[in-house]
Length: 131
Image (cartoon, rainbow, N blue to C red; front, side, top):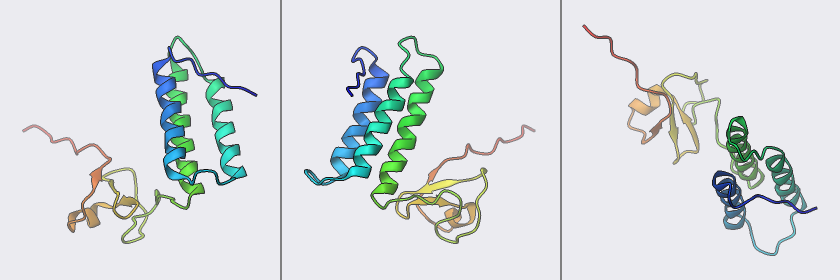
């Protein structure tokens, strides 16, 4: 089968290019890898199903598909971010006051972030009440 992503659809072309550039940069050249090939084919199949030249929900779906397949690629290569527990203390984390540690490869709870861990906030800052 052949797959076509129109270059005139800038977002779709950029997302697909981003995914395949990640594959190219993170894998060994000329090394047969059937599961990786199947992952790429499935990405193209689903991506093509969600092409919509008029934008709308299909654009958001393509963004989510790309993120999902990038996570699948990283997992296939042995990199799986910890997204349900703090990577430092292993306690469960909620959706409030989360930060991402690229050094440790996952989420860091508020307590460990306060201990000096360099992180990138994922939760919006708490709203201050006027007074």
